[in-house]
Image 1 (cartoon, rainbow, N blue to C red):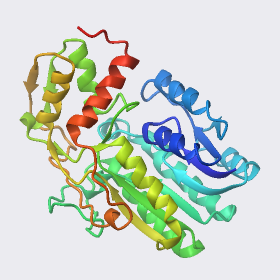
Image 2 (image 1 turned 60 degrees about the vertical axis):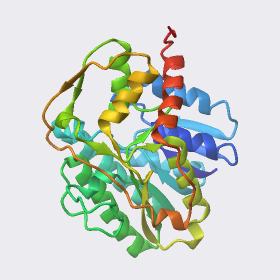
Image 3 (image 1 turned 120 degrees about the vertical axis):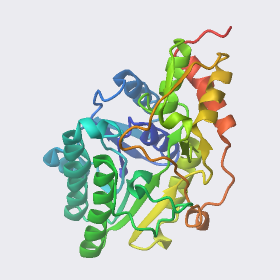
Image 4 (image 1 turned 135 degrees about the vertical axis):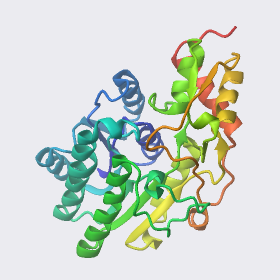
Length: 321
């Protein structure tokens, strides 16, 4: 089989599996949990299964015995690990879910790599590991010792665990610090998706920090192209690497929201409130390192949102006025 993609029913996993299975055999696993719409996850898998190169198995990575058995049975030689309990704010109220998936599950992945002599692991980290660091643009070389949420702490832990296994067992580990990925087939728990839902239903949007947030919004196609390029160039990389996966430009959240209103042909209905606990005020990534592998102009947020809203209206069966 070759390549295993964990979290293949997730947003990024789905898009990456779609591109990679067009060229090679891919095994996807996911536990299809109910953190957000299981229908959306199942619809993604249905699309992937249309490609004969893609095979799907429902599995929770916290089950080491079954994970190890599947890796052996399918002759897996490389792992792209994107499965995790997502959601920064959710980790504040439900930290134990992150312990099981992001730490125990991730440990199982590393152990399976060691046990089955798998020498390549690419895994999802997060821009949230930068914490309150506001020395923009954020570079991979910066210290990330002060995470603001338990979610960020688990992702920082993943990077440290990867370093240990890379050093001890010669596993090439590539960490991916994602910066606010958005686009078609996205996650309903993400802010931009929630905004679209509220706008469609004529509900008021609460804008935290009085709209003074900005984010390095990264369109999904750009993110996946960067991942694909890293994968293709893996032989040239060191045994332990970290990459920012980003647009390299930050956009004020209020502009992002206003453009969704425009695309959905609705008038803004906003309520400005104070900053939430655990929120980073701004994010902005350096692209110096990823540009050594993949240097192409990324899609701008207006074009990206247009693509997202077009898909959103189709998926939600929104009638145009």
